[in-house]
Amino acid sequence: MSSRTDLLAWVNELLQINYTKVEQCGSGGAYCQIMDSIYGDVPMNRVKMSAKHEYEYLANFKVLQNVFKAKRIDKPIPVEKLVKCKMQDNLEFLQWIKKFWEANYGGQGYDAVARRKGAALEPPATVAPVPTSRSTPGVAGGNRAGGRTPLGGFRSGSALSNEHVQQLQAQVAELNGQLEGLEKERDFYFEKLREIEILVQEQIESTEESGKEESVVFGKIQKILYSTEDGFEVPEQGVPVDEEETF
Image 1 (cartoon, rainbow, N blue to C red):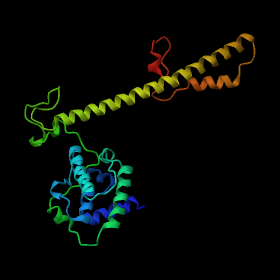
Image 2 (image 1 turned 120 degrees about the vertical axis):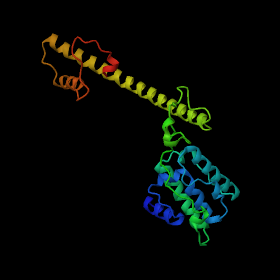
Image 3 (image 1 turned 45 degrees about the vertical axis):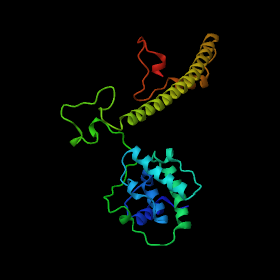
Image 4 (image 1 turned 180 degrees about the vertical axis):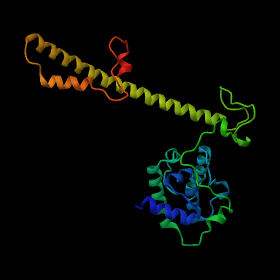
């Protein structure tokens, strides 16, 4: 398999672009033009090589899917993974597409810039940004004098508002799910530590009552349980604190 450095050098030379990361292929534009270098009939006028938004990424992959279907290429395209611009997912797909190119490219000359009709090309972002009120398309300078985005959503007239709201809602739902899992894990380990603490305390009190010498092991365990770090101090005595928050 080709390394990331080799793949980037190959893509940049073939397509006359200046990608610096494999993740930038997640915009879909490079994949489309690689296929165009093989067949010469990809509708490049529909490919946004400087895509900045996820809806543009998805549009590029729609073009790529149509090419695969028309050429009867039996290879699933993991669009949902690729558009997230993760290095490993795009590295694996780029390795496959390079092998496909090597097996099918006829050696004919390919003018990548001409196929893009000389359009200005900027490397795509590795994460598709979600527009905010400061970067609303069509507003000079990013802000409209006296205008603010309503709390309920985006300005009326934005063709992308519903899609962006759905993206944000999905992100919130995912984060809430992760938070719930972390809280359950925290409670699970807290209960275990609490049981150990009670057991150690009972053993120490038992040795004190019987007049026996305190167990060195239990003393060390208790010291570990009560040790602190900077920024995570045990509250002062007499100050009521929720045990869950203290943990």
